[in-house]
Image (cartoon, rainbow, N blue to C red; front, side, top):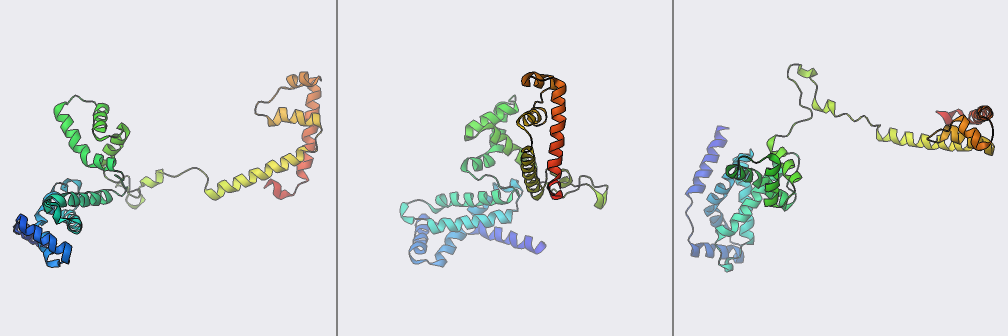
Length: 287
């Protein structure tokens, strides 16, 4: 660890002490790299701008990622800028490289800040990196803002909804939590874990499919058994047993023009016929 810190310190010292490039010298180095692929020119160009990488990386150190990683990603962005830079446009390399360095560091933060990927769109990315700054600025100008009004103003400034602001704020306010982490530390290995409370009570996929197949078979067997009933028996069984709203014996008797006792007798007889028809099927039909 001490050796790594020493190397990092030496690297920072070397980068910060690298001489600045005059505009003409920078232009020549960029031309040599673009036209001749002169790696020595690329090295000098990159070394002279490593202080820019370190400066930009330092602005993002509060996201909790190692400074060395941020500098490394910024260096990748610097090399990408060198590969794309056109020296004939009369723009200083540092101006052009700043965007690439910052973009590389921000992309690294979005990929590694949380195990849940966020900032997949340009507006979400802007929200991720601007939320804290805008919240602080609005709080300085008006400390009476409610949370809802704060979210509304931030969303309006960035071009996102209040729900997006609230979701990002909740993500930034707390770290990732492992589902296997114990809820308490007192029970040792027997401590309950968060994942224990996320059990889905719904049937497993194979159980759900099995239940569906069984239900289809039962429906088929019942439909076949109903074929042994007469038209009046079938009407009574449907009205009394199969419809969602069962009809009373008295109401059904009035509809058929018979007494409710007669309806009861026909119903009992029909149920017996159904029972015999179903029992005539293989035993597996009712498993």
